[in-house]
Amino acid sequence: MSTIIHEFTTKIPGWRPRVQPIKLDEATPEQLDALKVTPSNTKVSDYVLVLANDVETLKVRTPLFNAIMYNRGGMGRAERELSAVGASVVNRCVYCAAVHASRYNQLTKNEQVMQAIFANGEEAELDERQKAIFLFAAKLSKAPSEATEEDMQALRDAGLKDDEILDLILSASLFGWANRLMHTLGDPVVE
Amino acid sequence: MSDLSPNDIVIAQAGIGANGSVREALEGRADIMAMTQATHDAALKPSDPGGLSHGERAALAARVARLNEDEALAAHYMTLLEEAGADEAVAAMADPAHDGEGDARRAALLAYTDLVSTHPRDTTPEDIEALKSAGISDADIVRLSELNAFLAYQIRVIAGLKLMKATA
Picture 1 (cartoon, rainbow over the protein chains, first blue to last red):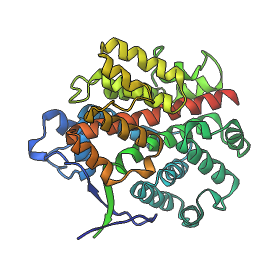
Picture 2 (picture 1 turned 135 degrees about the horizontal axis):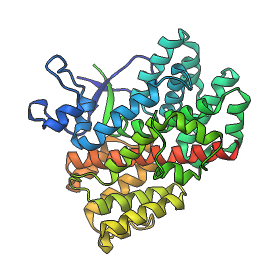
Picture 3 (picture 1 turned 90 degrees about the vertical axis):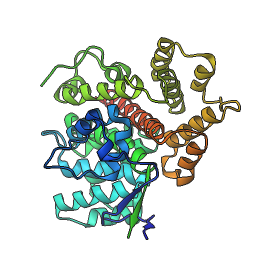
Picture 4 (picture 1 turned 60 degrees about the vertical axis):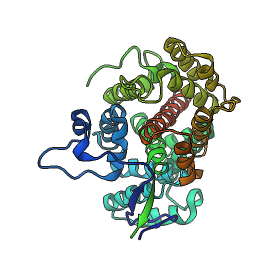
């Protein structure tokens, strides 16, 4: 038996789909290609098997996701994870928040930032730069009109350059996408 | 690094000029902008649309743009809707005040779209069950979710770029 979890955690839960994942042995060549299934890599998560129901979107979304989160230059990787957590907290995607909070912790070796965010949300005590990034991601996630020129100015005042601000916009927006899949098409569960 | 496309919808919608600091930042991420355009095409005009027609996708997209108070983006999707040659019942879905008028399938698509586009945190397993009860297949539920999820992304990138430009 598994139980749905509702509280934020940095321990990555399981994920139980609400719709049918495709069956790997019935997958089309296009689906296998999008899933990157090869003889040496046959492990595919239920989440990705669910998304393979819309293979045309999956095959272009995966490279977009990787480019926004991992491309060189611009905003650092840990700060992109912070942005992802800002969106995931607002959208209450417990699974996404767990994955990206734990990556943030691995990258920074500092668990206090995520503890503060999970405990106090937008009231969390963070340094100026962390706070500007987190709040911008959270507000843009609530509704595009919630993020203001003052929030953008706070980013500039905290020292973010244009290329970093662009990466923040992209990563926060990307999780508007990811949260709407992960949080709606399945449940985070523990055994 | 490739160049930015002159037909990039996000850049055009954000009103980014041919020069300036925002354009320069975007040029550094030209690959991501090209992939963003590719996801637009996959979500709105897939070669296999399944049970969610190009017309319905464009109408839902215009609706979501309006729910996010982005009339210029809604106009883009109304153009796609026209190109799709959709009938009146489908075109009506673009109006956020329209609720499907008793058509169970369309009513379910609209209710789900309204919820996921504006209050994704409030979605529950029952919302997916409601789609299934209205006869929408699992594959089409994923297609509908991807469309909504893509729009949430696109609308936010445009809004963020507008703020960048305003404070450049």
